[in-house]
Length: 139
Image 1 (tube, rainbow, N blue to C red):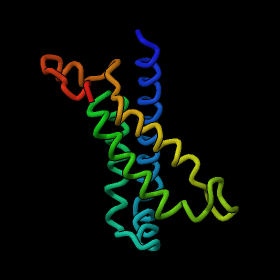
Image 2 (image 1 turned 30 degrees about the vertical axis):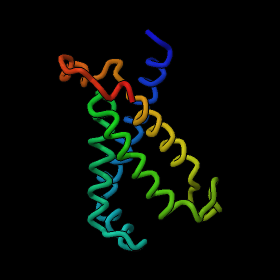
Image 3 (image 1 turned 120 degrees about the vertical axis):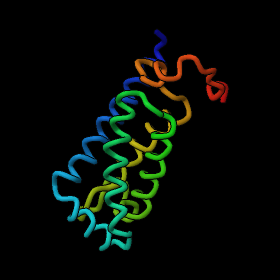
Image 4 (image 1 turned 135 degrees about the vertical axis):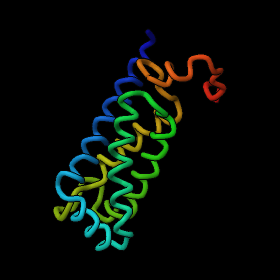
């Protein structure tokens, strides 16, 4: 086992668990509240469903190692959107009125690392695509 593979596995699983829980909480706390909040900040309310489903399904996919590069790329876009639309004005650590964007930046960096490097250790992708030549490894 290479240290980089183990480290990437840790990042992938922690990122997956974090996003899965964030999505789950959106549904448990009442997704309609999130829909209303999206509307209040000028985003289509229906987008809240997409974000919550992406967080849950994508988080689970990362934990299992399914489509890690694609899911992580989607999380990069999600974190960029959240940072620019919601958190940026509050400052890096927040301004007392709300959270800052330091966590969003950390999650974005983790997702970007996985999107660039992939994570194959203990990944179901290896089981499903073991016979295919993975040309993306040379990127």
